[in-house]
Image (cartoon, rainbow, N blue to C red; front, side):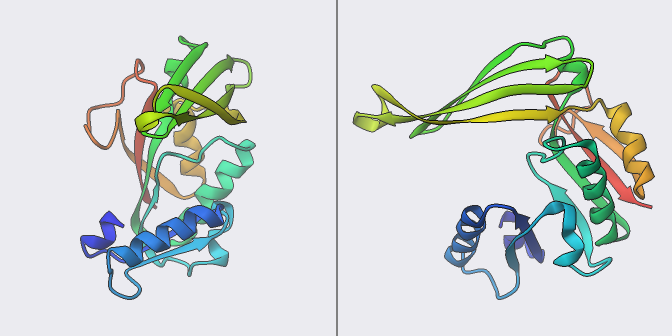
Length: 206
């Protein structure tokens, strides 16, 4: 939606009907011009079923979905993204879990907090298979201004294949991309560092 407000034509895809509904509602709330931002329920591994070949100048994978299935799923996404991107267009992936960091910091306990929700993340690392495994536990805040009492709302298992940049580069090249830049994040655009838990990547459609 921020890109659409800047004048770009944007299409979004997500597996979750709920999140797609939220996005469409927000687009309506911002009174965007017709067709400026469109959101679809679908699978990132099958972009060709929703979008025309070479129809996009850029593909953005925000807060990365890479690694949540088998490695072939990631390759399928790279191929599908290349197919719907014009030659010379860009692929931008943010929030990639950094194997170089995780291998040195294998056991992690992380929390994320908003006004009404607390999420506790517990991870361990399988160095042989390069998979980070763990559980996300969700707690609703109860009481005055969302504080005081936490109510357990559920948990979600996590099993993520994590990559170092040198592992992703040949996979992207094999699917029609040329990696141009790696950053600590798109916000800072600082160079990639092995001592940071995440990184961002820019590739060009070859």
